[in-house]
Amino acid sequence: MARSIKRVDNFEFRWTESNYHPGYYEIVLWQDYDSDHLPEGATSKEWCYTIASWQKGSEGWDLHFVGNRAFDKNKVDRHLFWELAKYGDRVANAEFDLEEKIKDFKNNIYS
Image 1 (cartoon, one colour):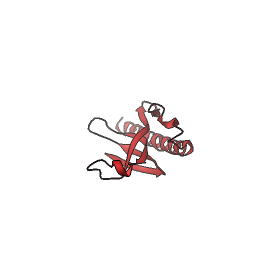
Image 2 (tube, rainbow, N blue to C red; image 1 turned 90 degrees about the vertical axis):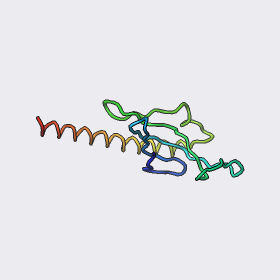
Image 3 (cartoon, rainbow, N blue to C red; image 1 turned 60 degrees about the horizontal axis):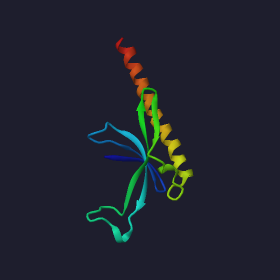
Image 4 (cartoon, one colour; image 1 turned 45 degrees about the horizontal axis):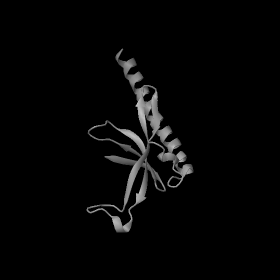
């Protein structure tokens, strides 16, 4: 399941979770299906693939690229990608900082 947080042109910053992963932030690139090749049963005329995702560590969220997708000059507008990556970094680390403050608060109350 994915929840969109912000979309700029064909890039989307979103939160994704599944039965196999507790959740992570990612940037995907949306592309239109070729009208002659729309898959049977498709519910949308566009599809996406992950360009980069954040992994949560002990000191915050770290941005990881999927191969060189973020640098494919034929498909990726680097300016838009970096704009969304900086936004995503602020959101992810603001969440991390808030979680740390809540932990500290609970530790101070119950100690």
